[in-house]
Image 1 (cartoon, rainbow, N blue to C red):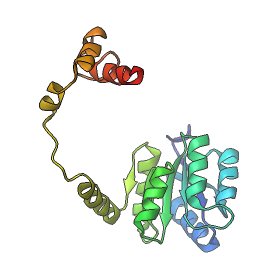
Image 2 (cartoon, one colour; image 1 turned 180 degrees about the vertical axis):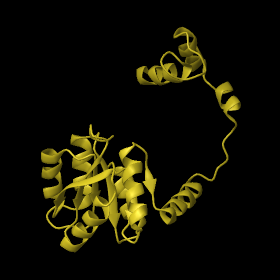
Image 3 (tube, one colour; image 1 turned 180 degrees about the horizontal axis):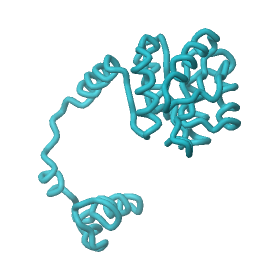
Length: 194
């Protein structure tokens, strides 16, 4: 999502003035990105989002008054169309998980290059998600570790539907494609009524 002019409007939230100014200078060199404001902490970020309506917020995690995780949660709950890209020097999985649970669209380390930062802003502004490559690798490893039991092929699992689930599908005139009226939606609705 971008402004009517096609420019991505960015708010930078970081408690360190030099970081805010540095990111502002770097991003303002890009013709499709405009830094519209800076926030000194999470509370300031929440207020500036309401005032400035940016497309993307670059959010530090560790800030006084209100941290970046809680500020991200408030922003994404109140204005879900505004995307938050978390930037931090701390390469800790706990921060990644917390930021994603809070609604962040991306997580990038502050040692990223200027071009990587600008591209990350573009990616999240477009509605996509982005994680730093090292973080992605660790998340994949963690995900693989969590569910190491092999799953049956889809056709076999569909054959294991209960009579009630199968009846719900037939009663809704469902297909196996998904969407409204599909067996997937019907099964979910049938489960709600159980």
